[in-house]
Amino acid sequence: MKKKVVIITLGLAVTAGLLFGGQLLVNTTRYRRIISEIEIRTPNLSQVPDGTFNGTFDAILVAADVDVTVESHRIVEITINNHHYGRASAVEAEVVTQNVIFTQSLEVDTVSGATNSSKVILSAIQSALESAVVEQP
Image (cartoon, rainbow, N blue to C red):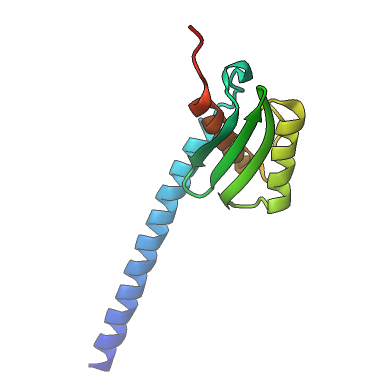
C-alpha cells in the first residue's frame, strides 16, 4: 500500500513536471518567433498630433505598456507604465526611451544584454505612435 502511494505521488510529480516543461517550451518557442519578427520603424511624426498616446506590445515572456507624449510633432516624453521583462532593468529601459527622445527615432541601438526587452519597448512606442497617426488627405 505504501509503495503504491509513493508510485502514484512520483507519477503525479513527473506528469506535472512534463506539463510545466512542455508549456515553457511552447512559450519560449513562441517568444523567440515573435521577437525575430519584430520590425522597428519610426512612423512619420509630422502626421502625429499633439497628445499622449498609449501603446503595448506583448511577446509572451517580455511585455511593455507605454505612454508617448507628442508636442509639435516631437516626442517629448515616454512613460513606461508596465514592463514585464526578462533581463532588462528599469535603468536599461530608461536608456532606450531617452535615446528615442534624443534622436526622435525608434531606430536606436538596443541595450546590450537586454536586446529583446529593448525591442519590445520600441515596439510598444511604435504602436502608440502608429495609433495616433493622422492620415493626410
